Image (cartoon, rainbow, N blue to C red):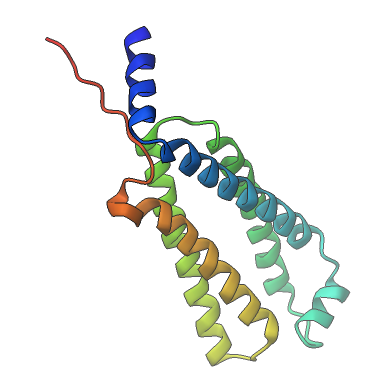
Length: 159
């Protein structure tokens, strides 16, 4: 244990930006967790009358149920992402950043497709921009600097 702590301290001194990068990623995870929880909560409890006004006067019960289910998923994602901030495993944090990068970009692509094939509205553009920006933020941590923005400690094993 002591050797591990000494090794990590030595690595941090060799790369002083590591602590700053970790704080930036932790902030992104916290920001994402809060927005996910808030959006999910609103999507879960939004009254059908308000939803009808937002989408332009047409209410679709099936779409409302899908929105509620997506809200449940966002609440769960917010909870998971909030707790990932306390995980020190660099490989795991890289994998999470990679998964969230692709997840957000795929969501942006889906909304972009809807924008050009269905009714166009400003909410779609806002969603496209937000999803793309958050996705690229995760991508920066996963792929930036050759994928080395998230420090992975590989301890030597003595035989």
